[in-house]
Length: 235
Image (cartoon, rainbow, N blue to C red; front, side, top):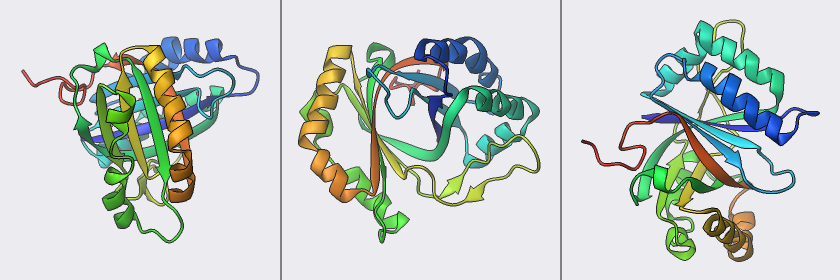
């Protein structure tokens, strides 16, 4: 299973409530119809001010090829055309994921801290994929996270989410090479976790990565992912 992550920033002139409402009522239902889709979750930023991303979308597919085929379909192209209309930032990452700590259904922990990182110059993709799972290994324990997951882009393949022409996977550098996700049951715990990371791990993030991004999100389901991806035991 492969996850498509999209970092989204609203277009100039749109408020955050307008952005969230449009995503929930127009774009989200449209994207939920994409073929090959196995799961779809929205994450809206709960940080004040202007965070780098107003929201982060996650869409699951059986493979990178299935994801690309979905976006190359008529409804996929229609969805991309719609997103372009209301977004100033739309950056993708295709990643695999592995649980580090599974605390049960994510429905009980709807608040998430995301750390996204880009490998430094001189570090190969394979070296990063070996190193990233060991980066900040005690993060879940330190922050009191209920669940934690590590994600990496081991293939270096990019989604082509344009609206015209022959759309196929591209080789290249995504916006980030890896992601760490940690989940919390309430907003106060999430706020404490992101403050902790900024105070204790800022130096490591700045010295070990060419760039990084923190996201504090409130998650919502559009299309429920398979049980194993949602932290639940298979029935």
